[in-house]
Image (cartoon, rainbow, N blue to C red):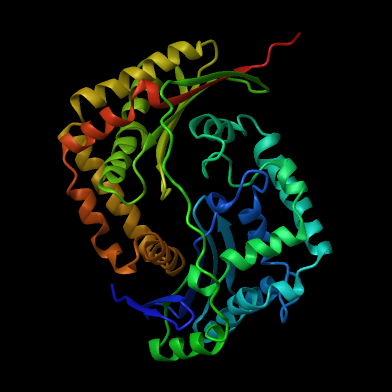
Length: 418
């Protein structure tokens, strides 16, 4: 894969991936800021900014970013996670300048257009989003409950990305401005351009629109040393659900480490597809589970490994948990079979190939590698690291992760009418 890397005078890192397979170009801007960079009492700011940056800047009106891109047949969006916020557009090749101008305007000229009225509107939007995704859906608060028990209150992963309803409501305009000045600066961002473009012309456009934006102060560091749980955290939650469900959370190594990759393969062996161990044992053989899931999140400070199983009607969640533990202990004691390891390695390679096929997803992947690992070109050797994982590596990471003293367990049970 042809990848160029540049750093502009203001600290903005630029990744270029030239590909003339289709007359499209993807523009992807990552800010190295997420909910991890918030403080207790001020949670939800990074996600709030995902919304605020579509509310207009000095030269672009409210929601005009959408109109400009969609008018030329392009697509766009933004997302927020624990460690990053990204914004992206895919447009016809001849509209690259439009996409770069729009992204530069909200990086360099958001604050002049930021008003209390706009903030109030987006606070209401985010609160409604929380109601729809967390507060008013079955099992919707499981992630929030897991994080609250898995991390100390001062640790940056203690709260959900969307933040608490109280903190969102209490957001002050000055706090929002300070958050923007601290994190949404060129020297805390990666700009990736992937697709049908000329690199020399693209760099000239980047210089035209982004170089005048001054760099900010160096963002403050965070203490990311996690306190051990030193004992399992458990909770039974009576909720408006039809079927019981068991959730498990385990601490794992940070994203990108060899241990994280081995853990990723372990979770695939356990819960990816009908051939996975949990699906086969709990759903098909014992027929005590309606569905299962197992995965690890790409979080840079501390890995989050999770799984769940939904009980069939009449099945006690304690029985479901015992069956789940049996499969975890088997993997931790015996490791995977050669066939299992080959299957999940191949699946990882297939998933990466699908991601690289799309201009949009490829640009996002390159931004991620440049942000987290310091070099987008490392993507070329990423799948080789999966193929280097051996059976003993998976067994060892399962043995270290699935420790009963370092886990959180939730049982959701149907609310009893009283």
